[in-house]
Length: 306
Image (cartoon, rainbow, N blue to C red; front, top):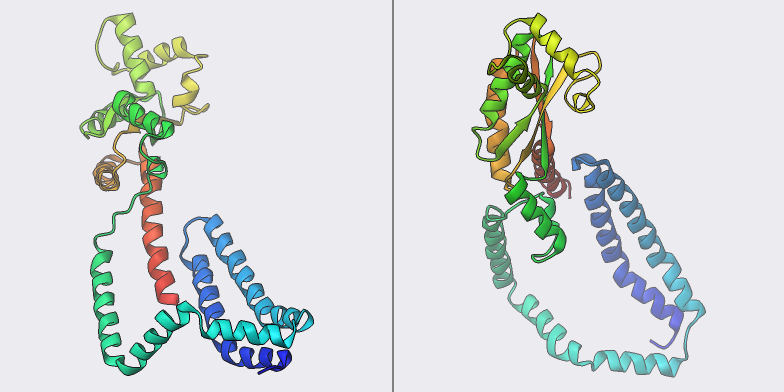
């Protein structure tokens, strides 16, 4: 075919349907992020990438052929390019034999792909997932090394906050904080905890020589007066003294350990949270668990939608 415009039309006849199908499946794949992603940034990424793919498809169908028609080269040069394409090593040694294999042995091809799909499905259960930030860096990277030191020497870098809603000067509320802290430290991934109850116990020991918390709220209020104005108090209690937190750090980067600890604390909170002292828990391990589950849901929904 020596006419460039006819050649462009003929080429479009061959590639139009594959290009449309490829663009459509790609767009649907990115649009699935909108329905399955937990993070809004991933949803935005899906929307704008789908739009980019759509415009790229339009350019491929309308702009590229137009440019080829405008900047067409001579007939002889086109014929030379066509002859080179026909006699290329890739075409002769790979593409043509592959085409013949597929056409002559379709049953073997389908059977091979069926086996590969079964192997892939089995391999899904061997995939290890992790949302730990240190895995973003290679071994030996200073950031990863620093993270390892923080976990080994300082109890980790992932903060945990246990929120208590109640009168922070009530002995029962403070005692609940002490018991919760002791329960948390039974986990191998919790080394230490901090709360206003610890400050009150230390101050009580310094003033009265007695261990533990005072049973009398009046005594707690007097000790509280000595702590009033201390900057550390703002970390542990709200200004109206109706909310307080236990601050801790989670050591293990393992996703399984995070899930075990989450269930461990969930059971305790459900059993010990009362109307006068409501207990809630949050922190990076729980964010990581949520992101991990969101990743699974997103992948499943994306595959189903596509």
